[in-house]
Amino acid sequence: MSEKDGEAPSRRGFLKAAATAAPLAAVAVATGSGAEAGPAAPDPESNRIQDTAHTRAYYDAARF
Image (cartoon, rainbow, N blue to C red; front, side, top):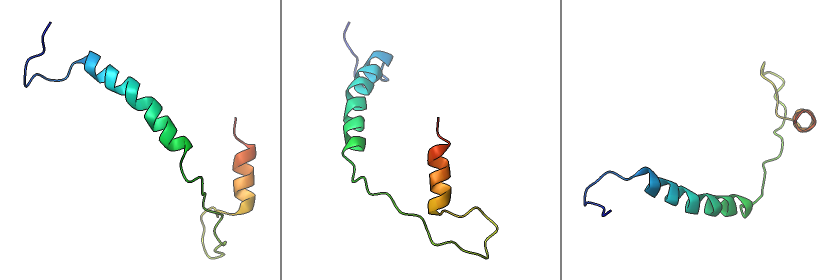
């Protein structure tokens, strides 16, 4: 089976590319800077939920 020029990529070709790209993406995520932004200063005039250390601790505790 020979591939023709200009032919649309096949499913097999896509799966080969995905299989080689997935580990590379995982390495890129694992070796990221790891710097996470800290909680913001609360805004008392906002009606929205605030991003504070308290709310982050709640979200971390509520994870399954």
